[in-house]
Amino acid sequence: MPNPGSDPGLTPGVAILVWRAAPELEVLLLHRSRFAPDFEGDWAWMTPGGRREARENAEAAARRELVEETGLVLACTRVADERRGVDVTAFVAEAPSSADVRLSAEHDRFEWVRPDELERCRPPWLADLYRELLTYRGQTRV
Image 1 (cartoon, one colour):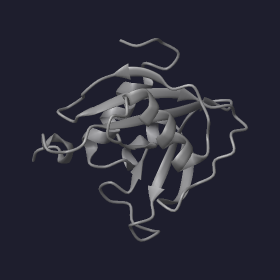
Image 2: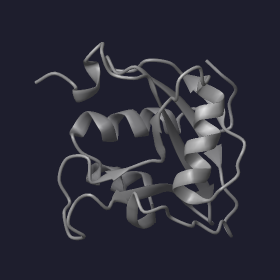
Image 3: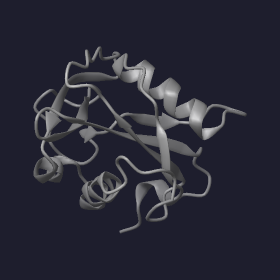
């Protein structure tokens, strides 16, 4: 089955893997409100991100999406372009352990999860992408 993001007609997007050491490594996941609150299937849990607006560069889109979806203002480090056939620019951002997440209407809840809990992100290639992005935390662009 092809990746849903592999359609060349789709608008380029950004994904921001937000992590913190609190005291163990955790990743911020958002549950999409367009699904029932107890839905756990494909595309229910994701990191912050979204489409780039017209003439918006990837860095500006990452900052905008992060603030819109979580209320967090963090430094976003660009770490990868197009992964697994998806036209997405990936970023990592470190949050303080005291980060105050404020969700938009696009999401109904959030959780800080351990890396071994990323399997809840489906389809499976999405969890693999997030695990790959975790390897870039604390590094500069590849």
